[in-house]
Image 1 (cartoon, helix red, strand yellow):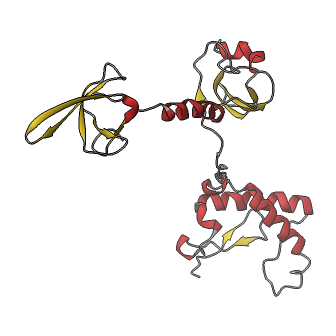
Image 2: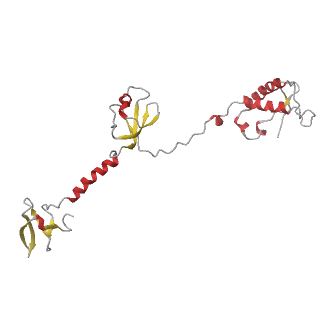
Image 3: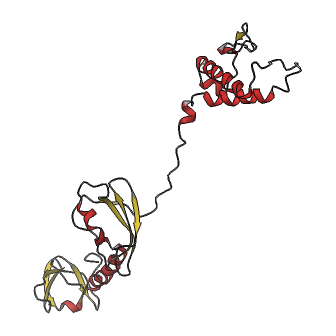
Length: 245
């Protein structure tokens, strides 16, 4: 390590070897300028030595007073570290990883009547204008003043239902639609003009010409290059693969 002649310290018996920036080992000290380090040293010595009543501290490890001066050196080191400014990288708080939000999506609310029904909701969350998030099992209508919005920090700006009461919510609605869909699928087939049909007892394909009267559905087919016509009850007909599925 390259050094320059010793620089007198704040006490006549103390001398501090002045090192060049290139000679300073890398580490925490690299976060500070030489001026900051020197100011901290100058502030540490009088503070430590005044408390310990030392007029000077021997800096020679081979000196007979080296062991006796150990508490003073420790006090100086503590005072030195205490007077250092906080480095920028040390002052920055580590960013906390946000837990994954696996709940239902938030629904924005711009003010107005309560959008939730007390008899449908068992547990729900709401977000306030001041970014607070609350989970509750209380009746939504009890917070009517905060649903309406009055430019208040507690205005509800978003909400989501965590748990619906039995028979309510999106899943209950989809189940309620299932009978309707099943009923629609169970509806009997009705012939329409243009459908290709055949008799349930078998036979060739025929095209529906008129289906106004389901008891006498008019159909047509070709035989020997001549159009043939007949009427059959709809109950006797069935669509072919070329007609309705």
